[in-house]
Length: 132
Image (tube, rainbow, N blue to C red; front, top):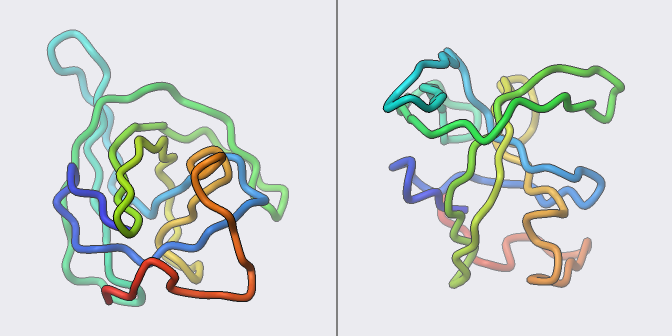
């Protein structure tokens, strides 16, 4: 999955229809005000199991939302919106920012991002191609 507004290389993402919201690995998350609106600066490690490259990103904050993980852990997360590119499809996507460093994928794509746009076949992988 590409996130051109963040200037990252393609990020290996997992489709998770059990998750409502999409989530992206982010760290050193710092809120700040810009032109009277709340923004967030954050860093990402876009390549699975690698500390480099480390890319600095910035986005306006849509809101802060309480998210409960599949393990039952709840946390307040910043929510940002960007454009995601999946195969030939460009779509707006809301992402929550959280540290996913210890998890299998740097990004989860939740059902709200793909609702009505894709049919999920749980037996297939890399249907939109493999970039990394």
